[in-house]
Figure 1 (tube, rainbow, N blue to C red):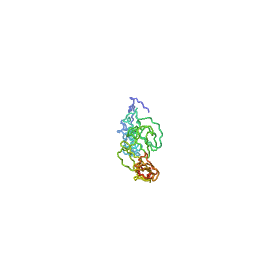
Figure 2: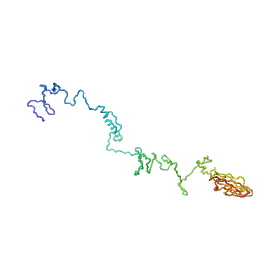
Figure 3: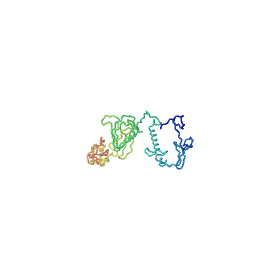
Figure 4: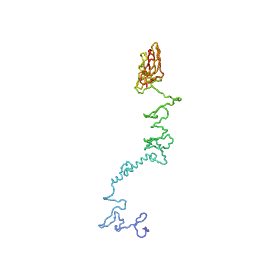
Length: 385
């Protein structure tokens, strides 16, 4: 309803109250005290309420934000502090161990704060200490064996990949290859186990690679120049032990050192080992024409023969000379014939090539061709197959 304009100074005086430049008329309730100008509804002049059982004064504070309440008020359906703690977490709740573990609100907020702190630490400057990241250049770290390790899993052979550009400063980390996988040709490998490989000639060092040969593998060693080729390069030399006396004998079939003089001349035993050397003699004069065994050159054994290296034939008869035949066994094939003249005539000879007996395991015999001579025989040789 619109306000009514009143012109002051005429008619009766009306009591009003100015509120925000507007005059509100004061009206006196009928049950207020007579001739009183005090407002009704205050402590000194309370509003009277008439009920079925009498008149009751209304007291207290009205039209205020907070109303005083006294007595006991029963409240139902509201969660207790323990229930709230169980559902939302207490003030001192610890953060959960993982991002997905169950937790109350306070614990979850602590976990989020921890993860944000870890992220800032990992990002480093300028994210730390409230620094600005505007127009910031971020450096990248080249992968090295220390910060990049790749493990190859699975089976089979890797397909050939494009060739990497030439590079001298990049390092590929450890790569584990399964036993069933293969690795193609590797060129320009500069290190092995973190140690530089020795690629040029020179003395052995930590970069020299060890090569192990299986016990059943043969490693042929050959010269660099073929027979009858033009000589070049250093010769493959043999060595041995320089001795002024015999070395101690070894057991049969043992390996033994070669023996040299102190000036490098190799000492050799002609024809055979010393144990197989033989000496044969006829020390009783042969005067007839009967085959006589040469003592010391009998049958040498199964599969073996006598070899004759030298012979000395003598005849002590003053006038009668004869020819002496060496025989392959008693009365056997003539191996060699020697002249033996009278008066200490005879023969002394070293054969340029030892004479090999034709029949194995047979002794050597000698016989005069002429009766009456007085002859002797001395032979040297060895036994062999």
